[in-house]
Image 1 (cartoon, rainbow, N blue to C red):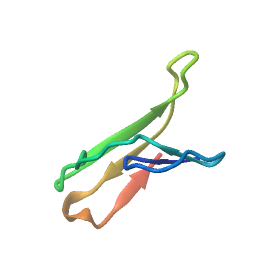
Image 2: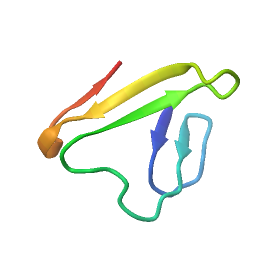
Image 3: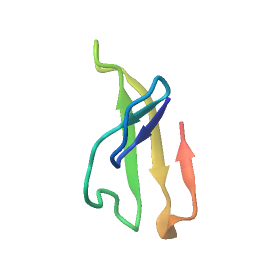
Image 4: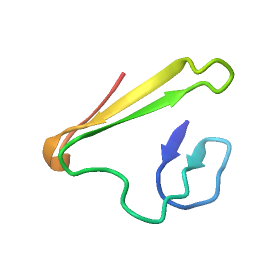
Length: 57
């Protein structure tokens, strides 16, 4: 599954958050994906300083 913060049309493999403006900082952020039924964390990704790396776990 790919989750995108911008606008687009959802598909079986890609979901769009629908944001129209910037949501991520340039100095680092974390996105977490939770299962809706019990709010169990499924995945999380960190965006590194300078926009050069992404680490998911």
